[in-house]
Length: 353
Image 1: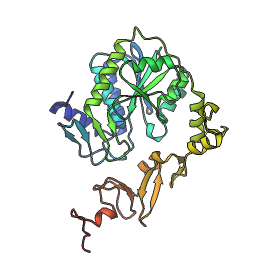
Image 2: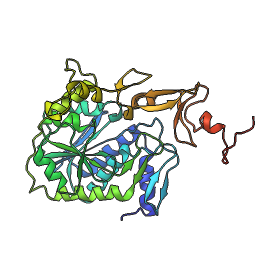
Image 3: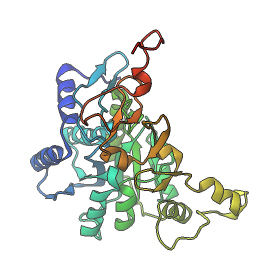
Image 4: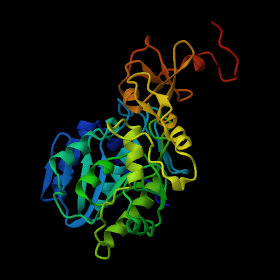
């Protein structure tokens, strides 16, 4: 299993502690040392390579501040930060760098503000109605876990089988940059696990061995490029209908992708698939697992989407229990305890007032 030496650890720590604008600037410079053609804007970077495969990752994280303290357990081979590591998706960007350092030159697409609604990817699609270079398929490195491959609304069985042949297992997800780019460029895409877990929270961890396992698999895919065919983007109509409805696309029907072959009534399917939780800040409906339950000052619970979590002035993450809480009296930028943890000591007894 690959572990980090001291030099590698220092390098990845510095990498994770860059803000999005700093990382955008750094990656522009780095790609310029590797590629003859780099398209650089404030929303994205595209480095045009000589391998007809695209690699995608996003430069932002859900956290407003970069981590001050990063820890690495060499025995368990895991990184984390009490400030929120931001491995979603710094692990993806870092992994692309390792692939390029090994001498591969695929086309690289790095986007901004994926966590705010794929803003960079939308700009890529708007600026390039067709791909700026011929691509056989696209790989995104922005998935939790160790061996997932997620195809979203791309339904190309041959591509699924091809990706799985490199040691990945098909799973399901909601949305990412390739959900925007692949339909526009009419090329199949997949999102691969890159080793992080518990993303969007201060308990996020990055499993270094899993990250390097995926790096190795992607290198194998790049080496196999001559055997790979062009994989067309084929839309999964049921998925697209469900997704567009759940995210508020206008003019969509209310059946959320129901099909009689599912063996349940349309009414039961809609009840099951309909988003059940509403963000207390922006009012957007989503599934419970995509909303953050947050302790309120009156002892209740409010729910917030990831966008509102990252931008809210009065949401803090408890340094003891790791849960988010609202407190308008505390200034932003520091770590505090929530009211529940402030009222306890290590033996479980209440603190005296």
